[in-house]
Image (cartoon, rainbow, N blue to C red; front, side, top):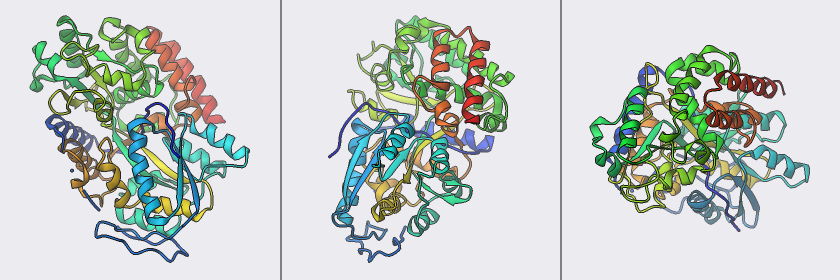
Length: 470
């Protein structure tokens, strides 16, 4: 039985050369700017001790054991269209193994949920964690089980080393990154831009141009920017893109590990830059108060409903925005297009995100599911549904339903190991991934009062120091 909650999406990333980051940004954005709606494929390995079933068609590339009647519980944050798509992946796993899978959507602070279930003696079998920090904490608490030989075989065949390393702790492989995201994109309502006299060739490339475009849109009678401030993770993404562009990859990595403090001048610069937008309530749909009551899905849909008079003209977030655009009458590639997050420094940033599958019990079905998720077979199922990018390099790009996602996926694979992981997802969950706490709360307070740069830095540093100490 599968249930429902509210939509939320993933996160991921790692290291990158500045030139490759710029190339990835250009490739992904160029792909999305084309757009339309349009189509699938794929490595092998056999779980230890299984008899294994032979693939039933040429499309199946991984052998899975028969697990008839074995029950498996999977938890993730996905609901709505994402839950529906992931359910199809689990349905295929059930068909091929005979296991009975139940899915439970959780809140963003998943470790809290898992801890409660473990304390009650009923842990879920597999969790799709949104954060590298959460994976490390699950290992430190001895909740996570190492990946089996068959899963590691699939990972070796299908994943770049950077993605494998993200799922490992102290050299031991635990996780499989199943879903990835490009989180450095700004989506815009083409009708609003055209009415304001902003052509596709004039979309902003720098932060200064971005603010100028926002003023132009505002003068045309439409509020320029939609911000889903009720979900603190969107604000961390705003900060990370500005910070990576300005401070560069080395400082980005240092701040992610708390090797430099949040009181560092580089943080002050990034917050001051963000305040150039957040400090102008007329440029944000509903002002700061309205943004803080707007959840991420609504921040998208209000940008693409109302024809040429929506509540906002632009919304920042990853490729997964297309899922929520799909809940409106707007069509990606015509009514909705995209440009790279503007360069606030020397280079346009590229921040990625993603969800990592981790086994929490010793059930054979848990390991078999990880093996399946590491194969192109599982990725192909969701890719066909849309709103999904896979880091699996063996997945045939034809699996994606349109050129937009197909080209973003190609750009992600072409980046190899050269990418930056979402910073907040690398940190302890109590700081980087808990509603109402840590970075989420500090940045929500900053949106409310963007003049308080110094106070925001101090709160961020105090919360980060405590989280990294704990």
